[in-house]
Amino acid sequence: MPPTYFRKTYDEALDLMVEARNYMAYVERRERARAGAHAGLRMSCEAMRVTSRLTQVMAWLMMQRAVHEGEVDEAEALAEVNRLSGADVCLDETFSGDQTLPRSLRSLLDRSFRLYQRIARIEQQMVGRLN
Image (cartoon, rainbow, N blue to C red):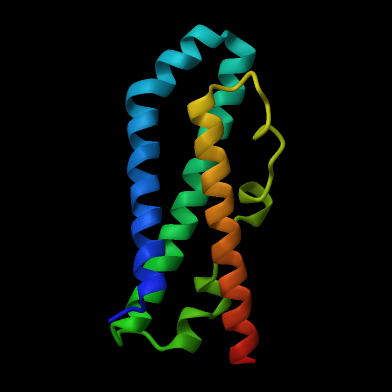
């Protein structure tokens, strides 16, 4: 059974992923159409950044869940190929504070960024403990 902090983080990531999917499926397209070509392109890029962050985090969390379930050992889970990746895209905050982006997108950007950072710190601690 995974520890409480893990379950809470997993639930938070899953909830954020569902919220992001709903935003992109029902709201983002409409907001992008109203924004104009240049701003709409920027919105699409930032929506993809949210998707990238959440995909990376969920993949990492699922690997850690496999460790907690005894399906994978910790060394394998922390092998380079299984580590959190995409930092060049996921840690880029170029437009997160851009007030011309819709508030709902800025919120997703901020929360996905903080979640990605938190997972990156946890991973660094785990790798340090393993070495």
